[in-house]
Amino acid sequence: MLRRFFALLLSISILLLIGCGKNTPPKPSAYQIGLDPSWYPINLTGKDNNILGFSTELMKTICAEENTTFSMIYTAWDSLLDGLAAGKYQGALSSLYPYNFNLQKFDFSDVYLPLGPVLLAAAGSPYHSLDDLQGKPVAVLSGSPSVLLLESKPQIFITPCNSVAEVINLLQSGQVTGALLPVVVAESYTGGSLQNKFVIVSPPLTDEGLRLLTMKNKNGALIKKFNKGLAKMKKTGTYNALLSEWKLTSPPGNS
Image (cartoon, rainbow, N blue to C red; front, side):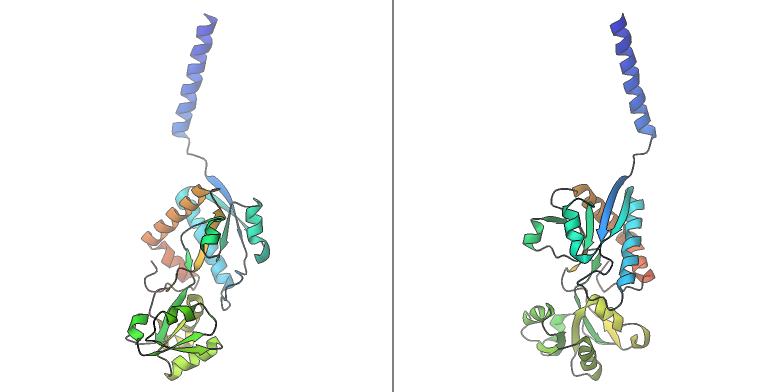
């Protein structure tokens, strides 16, 4: 008799737990995310705070979309990945590129802010891709990865420059037809007093950019939530609205 009583009590307890599970919303997952607010080693032309604000707001929006909470932890650039490896946070925002040797150590999200080179041209230019510039001179910063990109187009005449100012001067004077510059640098020359002089005419030509990183096979759920939330933001237009709010340009094809 006593055994039946305890069995009945156990059954009731299980039913109560199941019932509570149905009516109680699941607890949001909580993650700590490290970042270096200087975004070293990227040349951001003074837009460090814009990108910090954009990144923070983007994370907040993904939190709401994916029933997740993120705590942002600021750290120095030279200890960002060490902190991730030591478990001080579960993820890190970084421009680290997913080369094969990096993929052995980290899992990478989709790019949430492109940083690759774009084609900058004079306003009203009929050109929209590197293929349109065969037989034309194109300015590029000496020693930058964009030189290799241009070398893959042998019909283009490469004009190496020592500074961004030199690139812009050549473009403005008509000595070159286009210029390859990192998107964050290029967008600095498409607003203000230069708004009607230059325009970005291509999407980023490489997949360089800011991503969320986790240690390999450690927080796959975090990467999935981030990618899913980012995709929703792009679909609803929230992503481009956030770029505009923080005075960051959405290049053609980046949506």
